Image (tube, rainbow, N blue to C red):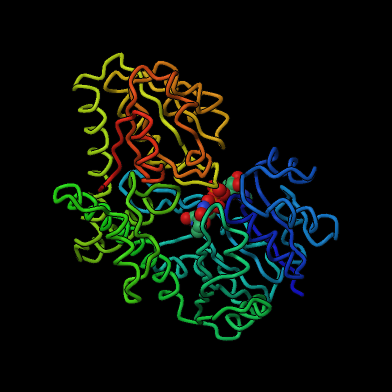
Length: 425
Ligand code: NAD
């Protein structure tokens, strides 16, 4: 059993802290957000994440999981300090490490001698050198342990990882960190620090490449009359390719892929290498959204000023409440800029994202469709698959659907009198 401090109690830090406590460690989570810490201390979970409430509750009850805003208290006994802070995109496209490094600076005088500082945040390759420099503690080791969980299944992913990557120049520290995860039945890969940091970027960017690739294939399917669902299935059965992340849709988004691909591109550029595959991957992603906006305009007849459009889904994917860098929000914002009236419904979103205040947030799928001429499905929530055509057919002024996730039963909706367009089919 290890004494662990997790700094940053967001999507990654909270899942990480709660899972480590469920694995038998003593964990204290530190965050500067007093409201969040108060919620957690009263048993409430500030984010939507399957299975998180149960493990947080049992950790708190068993007194193996604590929450505080007090950094001193968090670091007092910690042998391991996990840094789970946001590393957002800065204006020039690189990763903004200002918050992350300020925390490294703050903990430098406080961490216990002999402890290990572990980076879970996604940081540019080479950041470990800067962490060591700012910590300036020869009695403290620095280890990179990038996180690969996906929002919506973060607890399951953390407890059943495909691999655990641990990077350090200090073999003893790497082995001590590996021991924390020894109860998980997963391969542990120990590398040097730069390679661990690179694995995270290479993995996220590769997944983005796969998604952009299938979205480009979806366009080919539309041009040549093929069905991207069958094409993706046929490709995915090839074990060299694999079926994951071969789903055509409104482009990748969320709090990681956009900023991480951009940061990786910047890292390449900084060393004089033009990472063209990645640059095109990002360009294809943007073009997918342009194409959806064009489809909306041409379905309504060109000028969409004052025209009513219903949107199902605001989150960047299903089973999360996260709307950060969501393709749906970007598309809605474009439609509003073109003059459309947009009414949205999302089962996990109760407050309209700040960037699209003009859109109406409906309380149900039915309400979102009132007087709409067109319905666009932008997030793959299973609830949308269950909707019966007669729930909305009388509400809409024109029965048109663009299913950007290819989740609706095309024939059922066509039989009910709707015109149906998917993506790539
Ligand atoms: P987040 O924004 O959800 O959480 C960050 C937390 O840090 C917030 O709760 C914030 O209040 C807190 N914080 C800010 N300043 C602080 C300070 N000075 N001291 C203590 N806490 C402070 O971010 P996230 O989505 O959890 O991502 C964290 C890192 O993990 C990022 O580098 C991200 O790229 C990476 N990552 C994210 C995911 C994901 O699915 N979200 C997956 C893998 C890796």
